[in-house]
Length: 293
Image 1 (cartoon, rainbow, N blue to C red):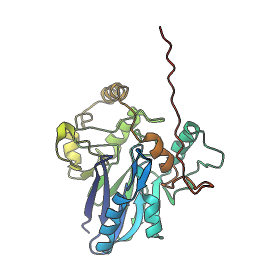
Image 2 (image 1 turned 135 degrees about the vertical axis):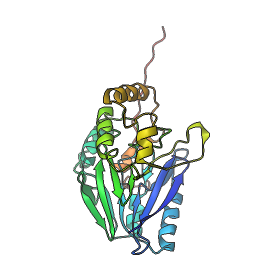
Image 3 (image 1 turned 30 degrees about the vertical axis):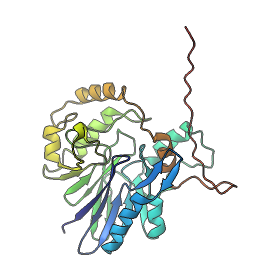
């Protein structure tokens, strides 16, 4: 079997969404779909979702899963729109999403009605578990560190790394989110990505176009091991951890972190409608008090 991969790039959040499919059987999965959100006016729209659905319908694809590489902190997931369109589709994420839910239940001061057992998702995936999507075989490779619930998905000769590993000229994901850990990220990449054959294709979750170059999303394990500016195959664990922690300490929080995670720990479900028919996002205020000297 030779898979085909269609890529969709959301410029507003630098996010890459993938449709992976078997052209013979038409079996397919979607990885990391985007629900458009404009914080100016708090407007939600489905343009990015519609592009993916149009492609799937035009090619007669049978969508089995939305695969989330993690609970994203920079965009809302469109996973529930796919469930509405394709009732048999399942939304899948690492079983360690429970840990992320527990952390952010406290951050948002959510009520007891918010459960942290992952039941919002259709499928909780174990490390190294193999999923079947018709003729597609998907192996879940643990790559935590950016968040505890990060998975990379190996399908045929391609691995989809989410925010763990980016293009060689950009590096790796940050590790300063709650429960993130640079040492854990290093170990996961070295053990579960860099151990793959060098010709394995790598598809990243984002591309931030360093130096203003054109958007890119595909490399190989061999290229990453030889050229990744933050984590080569020869980089020591302590060297990476020191670099990552120093860099992360200087980074600003993602613009949509609170909006995104609130929705994404709920498997892409938007907040429930209130008595006036509207939905509301809950965003904590971080107030810095300053005294005049």
